[in-house]
Length: 106
Ligand code: TYC
Image (cartoon, rainbow, N blue to C red; front, side, top):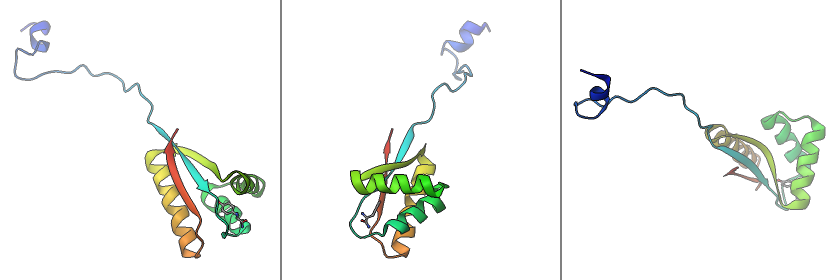
């Protein structure tokens, strides 16, 4: 059988050319929201612990969220972003703070 006939759909098995995956996975911003109750020091500690920031960067992000209402703590693939959001929300709840975190596509 010729290649043309084999790939034409006339035979039962359709063959698909193997080709490299060209598209990058979608990315998501992990967004921290401001509230009036969570202590600033707790937010700084959380950013250090869960996002690997040093104290200077964690303080800058915390103050940005405090003054602007929200701020990005990192950009990740879907699964990692979901895990970070869950970790932030669980950690805050465990310490009885109302701090909220969410994710949105870049
Ligand atoms: N606004 C809070 C305060 O004045 C501090 C804070 C910063 C809370 C960032 C949440 O994501 C947050 N204590």
